[in-house]
Length: 305
Picture 1 (cartoon, rainbow, N blue to C red):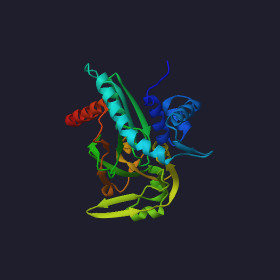
Picture 2: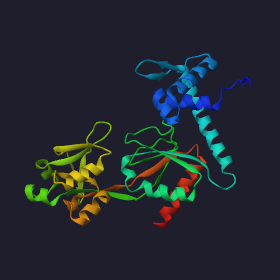
Picture 3: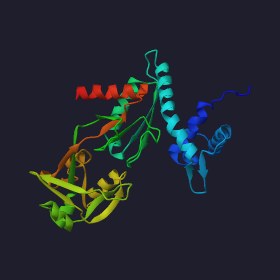
Picture 4: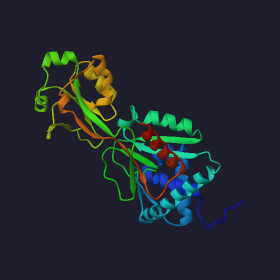
């Protein structure tokens, strides 16, 4: 039966928004679990229906046209509201249903988010969870996520932030006993300039700065990097530190098991700096049922802590 509706199907609009968020047909196809040709055909069908091109295509990139940008800006909140309404209808029997999509840094995937998701999924077996691990600062709405988790991020005016995990975390410094026997133990953060260090490089290309604090004195150090790892390489960095290849400056909770076993030795412990723990942030305008349930679950766990 022909479709005589003046409005394009919602599925076609969802594919259009996925291409916009992904910046290309292939990535959007992976997100949607369909073939790139299906995505391309859907967008072409939508463009033919509207009578205007929505994307400028080259061999290297896909960019929104002015018409495409205007359409995306107007339909994105409508699609979000429609999804929230559908989730609410599906959950009207009392069983929470729907999808929860989170954008998070790799730092919370070690021992903060996994146990929370475990308990949440047991509580709500009909909820589907998708986690995008990305250490860059991104627009969570633009990448199609319901909420994000970040450290110390400046939030847009329509964003709400709630603590998730520990309220305070610590950056710790440690090294293997053998390394300290060979090279000596630093007594001040500036002594690190004469040591081999294992450092993290962010997706932006910048090296993570080493910051220390004691009795109100703050010291920033940019020590020589014997080994540099991407932000997701924490486990390998710890292994290399245990093997004696240098000093490591990273989350204390990641190092504690190795310091307790004696594989690593705390260094400059009176200079370790505390900082605010991660926060879950989300738009104040739209609240899908699954996200509301996750926020309530986090609040419950925080109250039990």
